[in-house]
Length: 102
Image 1 (cartoon, helix red, strand yellow):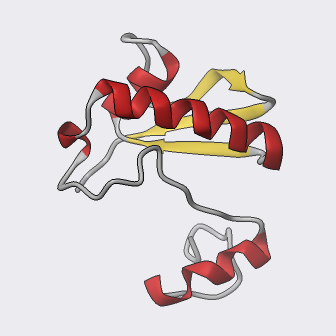
Image 2 (image 1 turned 90 degrees about the vertical axis):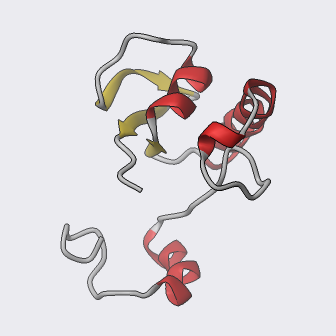
């Protein structure tokens, strides 16, 4: 994030809570720990998506980024989309779907 210019100095994973000072926050669709999104059920992701919609409505971020194709497919209900900025807004928030490289 530092190299992209979003924050003025580099942070480590131990400092991620400080990103709130710059208006950047993180959340999970599902809080259960797994090796990857393929270990989550569609039901879990849909339920997590509803909670995420409530968070988007409450906190009103400018942008929400989804990391991974499957998560965004289930959240949006779309099978056909291109990675990157999505044309639809969710609760007034711009959405972006990114390719997960891990």
